[in-house]
Image (cartoon, helix red, strand yellow):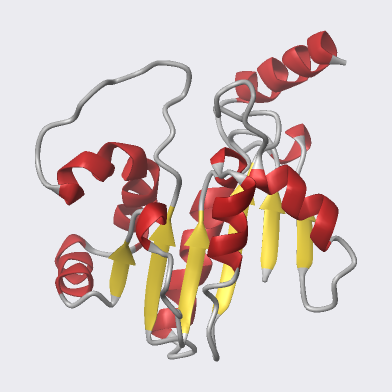
Length: 189
């Protein structure tokens, strides 16, 4: 279990998806399971029409973008149809044991403490798990605490759990993104 923590643009999602695909290709796992909380960034989009996939797809767009960059379109379709790559709502993880899988929780700062504990306890034998997040980008309602912040506090020092901490020097997007993150950091310090 590894937590990848850092600001926007450091490649947390992309690198995690790439590692998952590599593990699948090298037959270290049988499937990839990717999830993220369905929390909107400061605006309420309201009711979304359609089936479950159509409702959660907008929240998962960054994951699809990374998958499309790494896996050819036809191959990705094949993997998704056969649920070799599964993109699942966090709300539907309860009760599952995820065996022999590479499991990715993206945008974990938007989990509640209950959701985070529920997710972390899904890991079955032969599985690997990466949790990505940025504790400065919590989009939960004001009175709700972040499950990621709690997990960091509780799990630091637990054997077998690693933490990779990135900062603005690791930003791989446009050079202005690093400057924007630094400027906002000065404002909030």
